[in-house]
Length: 410
Length: 106
Image (cartoon, rainbow over all chains, first blue to last red; front, side, top):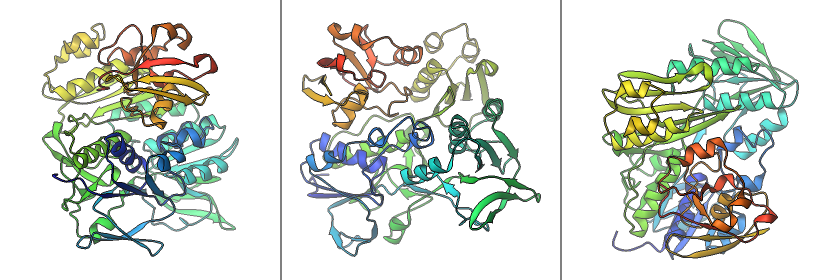
């Protein structure tokens, strides 16, 4: 871009939006920045909501990406409790939910994603909760407690993390998963089995192949989850964690290219050169996988795209292509995942799952596509490098735990 | 509060008052100090808050956990005084702590 914009409006004050605002200042952008957020509080970290925060080990201050005064101190006009309802791309004007309008030169869409709601009877009963925002987490935390039973619909990472935290708080947890195994969409069978066994040993119950058809209630409050097989699982509260949908409607209505997310290029720029899209809402090309398009729901992805947009806007060189990664903490387990197992034709397990310390490598020929590492930082760190540099891997050496990961990669 | 001095790779110095109880990483991130990425927000999962602790302060910052040691081992340009800033809690005893930042976290 030859000329820097005078006014950048960031639509959405989550991890991606908040980071973009801070990076623009870090990169010495001198113009006006407006950060618009639907929630009442400035940008914060969501990952602890299902972990440390739920267990009472983190407070609001530690969740916040930056203290509130950071925004005023850095000339960032942070506007909470308001949404953008329309983008007039021709006039470069946004309409806000309070009826006001706001001109922009460059806009960054960071609208995130929202939990999918189950279209089944009883979904509006008190005690049927979801977990996305700090307010959601507050509601969940106050409903949980010793002796309470939470039914968790969906055996994904959010559900598993919430189950682990619930146990730490002395609550009972039962996970209801529609598929034949937990983590069916996001992990291989070895990992699904490992996590289920680990959770069961800590008192979490599982119902697999269990399709929720409705919520039972009394006096407006949920008392159970009814399943397709006719049973009702009794509970004091329900957490629904069955995935998220991108908040792309604003972009779609403005005529931007969307395909299960707002389509962007390597600079995080949408089909309108004046509008970027970053974080959970963006459908983006990934260079290490031949620019395959996908939408990721992770903090590292939000940070990476915030960096891409901030670099493009301020005329800095684009950040080096990244290897996507994510993590999950449950009990004393640290799961670190790098890459995605696209077109993998072989799974190799290094280490012994029964030792709670092992890694699962997904290979395409002799190329590493992804690694899922449990309590195994060397496997994660080295695996991540091998995925990024596309070096062929000697699988016999990789399987041999007597050879260190540094030697394997040498 | 403790004064923590962050020195960027290019020499730029940031002397900041950081609340005790926060980590050295949080002190940098909340004040927008460039050079500490902290992708994982302090979960010891990413090794992008690598710092060099001034030799005079090494003993006071305590020992590394096995997890930190293991993550650091794969960071770039690791030295004897390398730490992950998310694993150093700010206490009154660290008032005046000096940490230097590497050229890059990746």
